Image 1 (cartoon, rainbow, N blue to C red):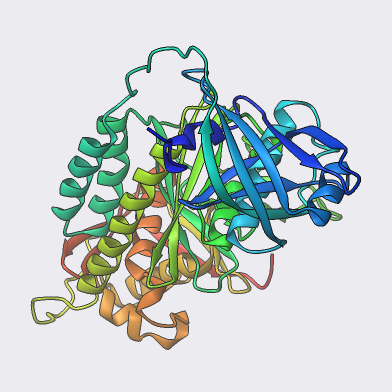
Image 2: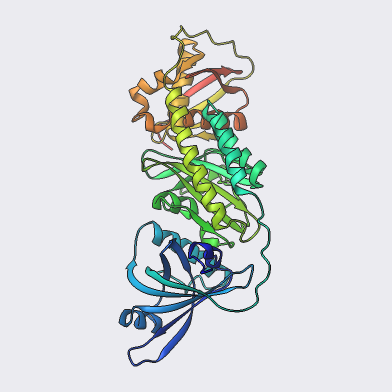
Length: 448
């Protein structure tokens, strides 16, 4: 049986380097190693263009070449007869191959030498199996299809966003043995993502931010494409060092407002999957492992499907939370607080909030928290609704795509980790209660 291009996807993982043979204008053959062969579809592959070398010169003159790839499991060899079509220097495919190349370069100590100049697209004219002995196939590590079905069933049963996000990460561990994962939501300004939940790390990292285009998460978000790295790679590793409470500055008193990103200090494999809905970026799912080559193209395919399901569920439950089923009722009075007063400072420039000099939150979540605290101290309120927050122009929420529910989850979890005497409790669809256990002293600061 003639092998299909799709059946050879395991050969493109980079475990065994591929070889390309080309021919010069004078008929002289040339053979070279390839850094990257990428499966595009059933008829096309992409090869990495890194140098203007003899191979590149030959391809521009004679568009035909032969590429040999090797299955790292069975040791089977295959020859692809290919025809050069074009070079892409931007877009999702280029960004994907750029990230993968960075991983390979780092693994081989060639980070300063390897640089992707373009993704060369080839049409595959013929696939031929090279005669020879091959090893028996190894059984697959896990049944991805049954795990996908189980995870989708669990997501479908979630009516609240907090439960939905947790169910996603729990399902990955239970059904696919993925023990390190996190979910980040996209900020509507299009410049950053923020962590709302994680699993398997010593520190949750809830509230930590990643800029668009930064690391594997930012590249996946910016390119709207999954990025899979099979080797430990410094370029896409986030610092795990705990930040100082007071950062160094000219006057020595600048306040630090960065939350350390979670993640493995020595990640052997990473896979970032953007959560997309009708072309709109909702967030990114990141899974990690200390093992190299832990995630295959099959894992990537399965998680892309599951990520699409998660995006639809996020949109559905978020919209439901904006329209309470019950009529609004007057807010209940707040319970009396006891103990020593707590100083809470708010900096309007970026809406950062500090509790007794300890950084808590900033941005939209910080603005929401400050509003709740003011109404609690000034009017004694304890009951609030998502709808009233949405209608408050001072918060600057653009529309429902801001995902207000995700902001409240972020705030709720930061409070649970850092401020045990203040809590947010959900009391119904689109409703929540603010619980304050100690007297508050609010202070509006001029600047950071």
